[in-house]
Image (cartoon, rainbow, N blue to C red; front, side, top):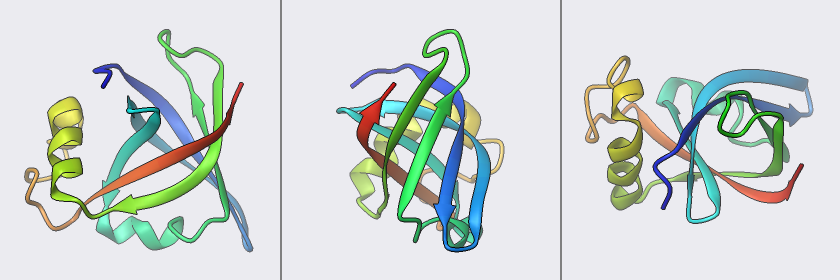
Length: 111
């Protein structure tokens, strides 16, 4: 598991068009993980396809295309909290916060 986190944008493509969400992403076991608040999941959890556009020095100009999955596993919540707690603590009350949602992007391509 990498401890690197990257600022990026989650681009969601759905029947109503595309939307962009700025987020922090971490690469974990070949997948890209991020977190959001429960109130935002309906905006993109049913998307057919997503892209991550990474925009910092670590992963400059990287685009990851893939599928999105919500993880309900407690271990995933703890792992992501361990990596991203400085970011998540700004809007989340901890790993047990019911509003914390872990999202995984399963890459199909990376460019």
